[in-house]
Length: 452
Image 1 (tube, rainbow, N blue to C red):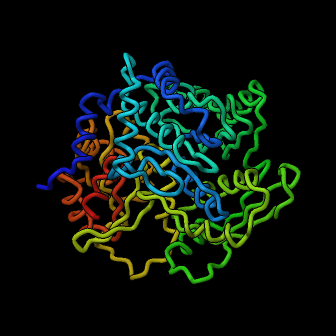
Image 2 (cartoon, rainbow, N blue to C red):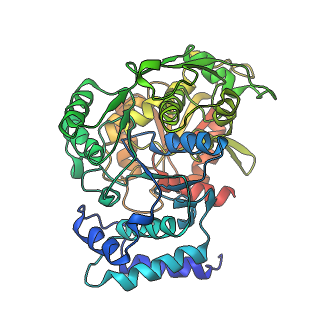
């Protein structure tokens, strides 16, 4: 059994006082504490990011684009996969354990009678860290929703970004696209400008209305920038091939010149992103549209390098454990599962070896949080996966393997149960040509801990 480090012990103690599973949305506690800290006015210009899926990947692309152009960037994301320090990037470098603990100590001293939730405490930690070190931009990801998320205590924002909005966290945000969009679009308030990915019509209607109410200029995919993508087969094929030293263009983003505040290049021919899946092209294009607004002129060569240089773990990540290769993705809702499974669709790639009829084409090893609807998630996976290996959720409450199997069988998948992801991978590798571990970022974190 591994020995915990002093940092891990300190964070476990903190979790005892601020249980991570406690969710109590609201801005009153965090606002009072950051006022006591007197740090908000020293935070560099903020780009605030909300949405259901694609937030972390969009931030990864935008960070890389800005850094490729010589800008210094702070980043706050959640959740972490292995270490709490992952949540905080300070001027391009992951925060040290000592810096995180020092910031937390300052927050605890200013907390007073305001019993912060764990996420509120971590949000305040980001603000303290970012106020102490100069940078050109801060990229801040919401934790849950937007309107009452602790990150929305920011007094002013340079830019708000909305990634695709879908059904998730319905117990907190509502059970319709309209209701969820209202919560997330609330980050447009106090933003100088906003950008949105292509959205469900109901979400787009809400976003447009909020932009009008808050007098926030709104730039939108399809209207203000367009993607010209090859078929999903070409995207997947390019990503599965070995990247050449000078990646060839496979897709294009066109940004309407009359919607830009600069006279930069309007069209960018780009290599397929290193982050896999056609949905990552949409995330990259959103980040590129924002970067074209933020910077006076983009260098096409540096944009190309950003496409192949952006990384974000547990997003169709290729790994190996005990000699068994597999894919890892943190998708945990139906919209996310639909995007991931497209990567494995029959038209998406040409098998490197002859098909093996005795084996399933794809097995999914799944753990799913108890607050996530099972059926919609598994229905998307079942469009291509033939075998589900159900495992218990390693942390937090999860659906039972029996419940996952029952739902998977309703979707037409064969099912098995394993005790953990190690056994699940071993079983799936014996029975399928490809294996995908999916269902939770917390599960992904456990996998990455063991693989590294």
